[in-house]
Length: 158
Image (cartoon, rainbow, N blue to C red; front, side):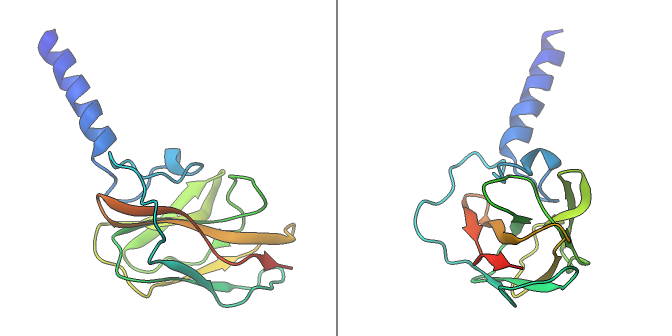
């Protein structure tokens, strides 16, 4: 019985600190915090979220790029105001990335699908009809112990 308990606890601890090499889980949609047993970087980020346009209309695709050095992981969403709910949908993710179902929508976020290096990827966000303004937000993981949270694009307006 002790052996089973020890194994169960060991696996839970390992899972909690091992990170997510195949993408962020749904449980990370709201706080966007990686499961790496370290804190986010507090200094300025080498990454910037660039958007193709700061104005949009319904179903107009907005191109989104993470500008900076190569990175291993990310969680990318569009949000509005102070809400933690993902808004809009994302076009087909580039290689080494995949959709993540946040806020009950299957294409509402993008995350990495492996820990391969990613650089100069372009992501496509499609705003919904019911939205007046939004911003793109991301957590970008350079490596297991180095990541930045709460990166934010310029505000996008209808």
